[in-house]
Length: 346
Image (tube, rainbow, N blue to C red; front, side):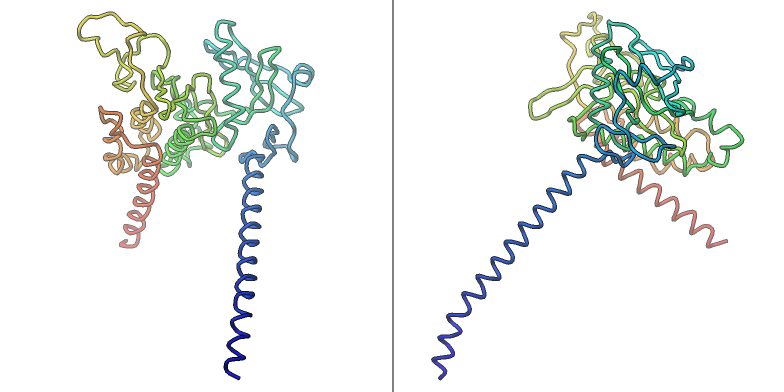
């Protein structure tokens, strides 16, 4: 009798185990399928406006719309006034179906390659940290994007000085803006279009002009005309232009290494560099953003160590944008806890 039960068990056990294995395998395949679908959906969605790829939704719009094409831009976008001009493009405040937008036009054929590079980066990098693309027309060399009334980060002091925004002139808001800036660097250094370096950053003013201040007091990067790619696996480094860079704002490796010997600058002999040039500039940008806000000196004190690391003469020893972002987040939490403890004591 015992031998009979043992025989049955020996027959049933492999069958049960086989069924369990098949069930586990099918569950794993279903999970992988759902994960693939989820990732595919993520790639099709613009995380900023919640729209499908190549679509946009401005703040007052109820539904998403496909990027505007040449015929629509020519017929429906109306210029209002010039609001900015650089070597590459002219920027106009414009109107489309009652919505204010920014219309960028190529300023000179000499810089068409830069203009088209900026457009390709806008297309590839759409998301919550990048200005929203509304449409473009290659025939007319025009780009339409979301308009942000506060303008560039250069305007921060003036905006916060306005009576209706003075309640936002706090270290919390300013540190949040600085953290947005670091988040943008982290995104560009790890973007879907590769590891990108902000080359239009030869001075404080020039760098600040690359970022727009949104209505809800966040930052988006706007000017992507000079965003070359670093590829360590191929040994591909970058040089920001063919002219000599000077001053204390740019990273040491961006300076002509033979300037002390009197040897004239030569682009052919100038060594290339990587994205750590962006890290060098972080303390100067943050100092501008923090300004003279109450509590700003305490923030700068807490950021001293990470900023010291950002200013390391050896770019290899500078932290990544992600490590800087972690430090900023940690500092924000530490100051909030300190202030909370002080209030409890009172």
